[in-house]
Length: 271
Image 1 (cartoon, rainbow, N blue to C red):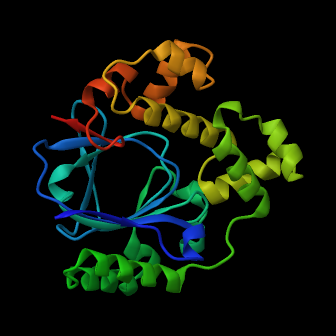
Image 2 (image 1 turned 90 degrees about the horizontal axis):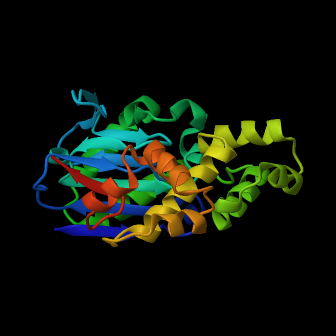
């Protein structure tokens, strides 16, 4: 039992960041908070034919989906049920990459889990069944990679969006939309429309998410954090600005993140 990850071979690697296979014993805690990250995810549950997301309130109402879903772009954390996270296989798409698989407007999928059978019908059900019948994790990853390669269309990302993505990835803390508009040679309105269609949200929101992700990467594993220094290094106006953005994306305070953090920076154990 283990976590296996691999980067797909070219040209698929331009659209898919990684493939992963999780086969682990049940977690000691019931719920986990999962932080948002750029890109859409394909998730296929091989333990239960169900995906469960819980509302972030005292009631924790359960929202159920199929065991095979395309998780749309996220701008806030989700609460998941660890009981179903025992044997799962999936793919993390690069921002803008999932459109090559679905042909969908990513903005319409923002914050949603879409049943894979709604997109691919019996082909999705057949994929899950073949994965269930494949005992070796590396063979499962190879099977998923072949399935994606047969269905993804290249090229996918508009040149102006690709250029904006590359620049924002390098310097999210210094994002200036006016500069992006000049660099890409398209109007701000058109850039925003193309970006939302292919990435799921606008370039300003994307830059804010990347800046939050940089903070998570910087402080993960540390029990003592100088948040004022982190805020300054991350391009925030002040510590209060950082705390506001942290609550916006993570649903918790920076201090709560430090207290709840575990082995994986994106997953926080809850009761």
